[in-house]
Length: 116
Length: 227
Image 1: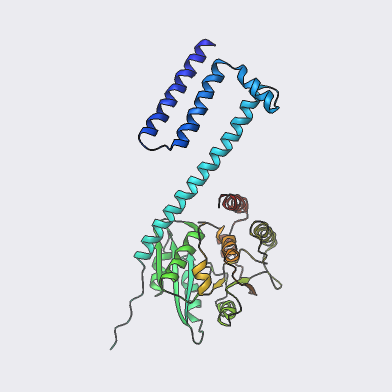
Image 2: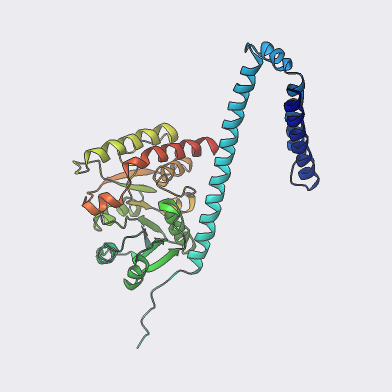
């Protein structure tokens, strides 16, 4: 168990370092930095003190801590899929806009007959 | 009065020449007509054939779908200050003479947005299509609050106000419901006019596939909640 905990902790620390790096590059807002930091810190707490989830689960009214993690993960995954979907749609629309601009710029109009 | 007829076409080499010849023949007094084909990234000779028919051709370098093509056509009409726009399918399912019917309420200032409905009078529409269409009507009503008998009709007419207000964002078949959503949002006067559709083996194969219905529903749901 200890090896697993250490491995996951290293992974989480790596993930946290990426978050800080992206924040320093200006690619992440203050709000995103805070939410990602809270999430990864929570993961570390859960890894070393698994009973924490049971306490939180009991407060919310979900029996076991592991159930809470599963429910929360499903909700988070749905949310992420939704975000990705929106991003994809946005990209699709941007491609259409580009294609449209090119089509309008290169509009093929029939040549008028020269006047006699 | 200037009328722009938008014909989105994707791989329609078999019928596009004939459809364009039919549309060209339509004479409407007091109306200056221009035909615009939007070739939606066809991989066959659609572009060449439309060009040879001496109409305006806008060519998409990539296939963007019906919504993408109609959006390009509307943008063209806006830029060229068209007073009336008609959208017309390239698969040969519309009777060109029906163009006169759908623009009549616009000319008489009775409506801003007109739909040529294939289901108002005894329709020869195949049963499976009727069922899918009815589902689309109910679904559009539930999502956008507009009831029409044929949301999926490709024959529509828009006046200057509708051309300015309707902003197409969806790329594919969902565009038919988006027209209604946009019309409702801008409080446009919507009217339906009965038309007769011509169902051939070709137009059935080229039109909306029944299997697309679920994908359209999901897209519309996402669109409704994301906007």
